[in-house]
Image: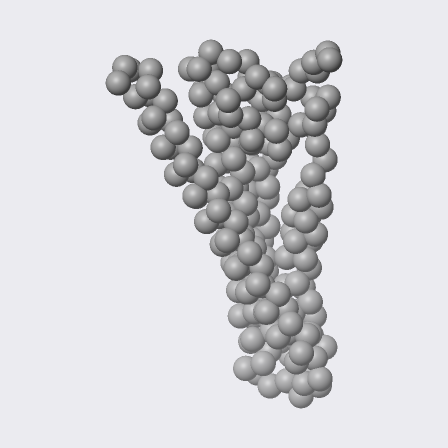
Length: 207
């Protein structure tokens, strides 16, 4: 087996491994969303007890549940970031394989084009995938849910009755979540922009 075939075999093995990682990241994202929805449903299901909160309940609604939600949000964004980065890398592998085989990196000529095909239509225009709305909706839900939990704590008792320690912990958790989430979102946007610039557009072919 010559060096070209050895390189191609190694690249395809790496491609297969990265495909498996993408499936893993997607599975983790789904699991985290399930946990998150369960937490939110737990909060909403306890609304009837709001008028009879005791100190332990206040701790639950103002610190523990918001903290768990913020942690799940950051973990979910980490999975989205890893998924996006892996997808970008797969597109690079496809281009590398096409170059090794001496074929054009276009839809009709290439040997591998799936990850690039997901980004552009036949005219070479970027596709506005519905997954962008999915991620925006999930992120919006993740942002408001800790406030819902804390608001429930404030409804059960007056704000002055909530321990200053609980309020301080909630604020620290919220600020930490905002900082980490902002960093992840910025990195994901940069990856997307770099990917769009790097992937060649699909060329129109005349019949």
